[in-house]
Length: 81
Image 1 (cartoon, rainbow, N blue to C red):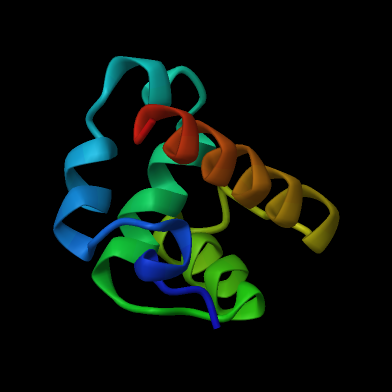
Image 2 (cartoon, rainbow, N blue to C red; image 1 turned 45 degrees about the vertical axis):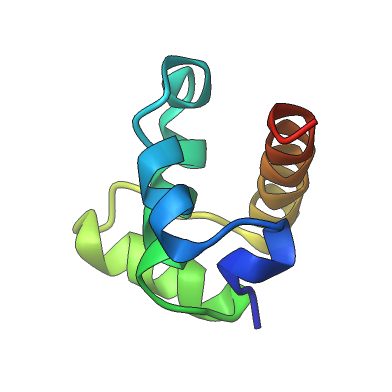
Protein backbone atom coordinates (compact mmCIF):
# COMPACT_ATOMS: atom_id res chain seq x y z
CA UNK A 1 0.00 0.00 0.00
CA UNK A 2 1.31 3.46 -0.85
CA UNK A 3 0.88 6.04 1.90
CA UNK A 4 1.92 9.70 1.69
CA UNK A 5 3.95 9.06 4.83
CA UNK A 6 6.00 6.49 2.88
CA UNK A 7 7.16 9.41 0.76
CA UNK A 8 8.06 11.36 3.89
CA UNK A 9 5.19 13.86 3.65
CA UNK A 10 1.70 14.30 5.04
CA UNK A 11 -1.45 13.98 2.93
CA UNK A 12 -1.89 17.77 3.13
CA UNK A 13 1.65 18.33 1.83
CA UNK A 14 1.05 15.88 -1.01
CA UNK A 15 -1.96 17.86 -2.19
CA UNK A 16 -0.01 21.13 -1.92
CA UNK A 17 2.86 19.64 -3.94
CA UNK A 18 0.45 18.63 -6.68
CA UNK A 19 0.22 22.31 -7.65
CA UNK A 20 3.98 22.99 -7.79
CA UNK A 21 5.14 23.97 -11.29
CA UNK A 22 8.11 21.60 -11.26
CA UNK A 23 5.81 18.69 -10.44
CA UNK A 24 3.16 19.68 -12.98
CA UNK A 25 5.66 19.34 -15.84
CA UNK A 26 4.12 15.98 -16.63
CA UNK A 27 0.56 15.37 -15.56
CA UNK A 28 1.23 11.85 -14.30
CA UNK A 29 3.13 13.08 -11.25
CA UNK A 30 0.36 15.48 -10.29
CA UNK A 31 -2.29 12.83 -10.77
CA UNK A 32 -0.39 10.37 -8.61
CA UNK A 33 0.21 12.93 -5.88
CA UNK A 34 -3.45 13.87 -5.85
CA UNK A 35 -4.65 10.28 -5.60
CA UNK A 36 -2.29 9.13 -2.88
CA UNK A 37 -2.99 12.38 -1.03
CA UNK A 38 -6.64 11.43 -0.81
CA UNK A 39 -6.12 7.93 0.57
CA UNK A 40 -3.48 5.20 0.69
CA UNK A 41 -3.66 2.92 -2.35
CA UNK A 42 -2.01 -0.15 -3.75
CA UNK A 43 -0.42 0.20 -7.17
CA UNK A 44 -3.19 -1.74 -8.90
CA UNK A 45 -5.77 0.45 -7.20
CA UNK A 46 -3.97 3.59 -8.44
CA UNK A 47 -4.01 2.23 -11.99
CA UNK A 48 -7.73 1.44 -11.87
CA UNK A 49 -8.66 4.70 -10.15
CA UNK A 50 -6.77 6.81 -12.73
CA UNK A 51 -8.35 4.90 -15.58
CA UNK A 52 -11.83 5.26 -14.11
CA UNK A 53 -11.55 8.95 -13.22
CA UNK A 54 -10.09 9.84 -16.61
CA UNK A 55 -12.74 7.78 -18.42
CA UNK A 56 -10.03 5.60 -19.91
CA UNK A 57 -7.68 8.40 -21.00
CA UNK A 58 -4.91 7.38 -18.55
CA UNK A 59 -4.07 3.71 -18.76
CA UNK A 60 -1.00 3.14 -16.63
CA UNK A 61 0.76 -0.18 -16.55
CA UNK A 62 2.96 -1.35 -13.71
CA UNK A 63 6.01 -0.66 -15.87
CA UNK A 64 4.91 2.98 -16.07
CA UNK A 65 3.45 3.48 -12.62
CA UNK A 66 6.30 2.30 -10.43
CA UNK A 67 9.03 4.32 -12.20
CA UNK A 68 6.76 7.39 -11.91
CA UNK A 69 6.34 6.75 -8.17
CA UNK A 70 10.12 6.39 -7.79
CA UNK A 71 10.63 9.71 -9.62
CA UNK A 72 8.14 11.39 -7.29
CA UNK A 73 9.90 9.91 -4.30
CA UNK A 74 13.20 11.34 -5.54
CA UNK A 75 11.74 14.80 -6.21
CA UNK A 76 10.07 14.91 -2.79
CA UNK A 77 13.23 13.83 -0.99
CA UNK A 78 15.26 16.49 -2.82
CA UNK A 79 12.64 19.15 -2.03
CA UNK A 80 12.76 18.23 1.66
CA UNK A 81 16.54 18.63 1.97
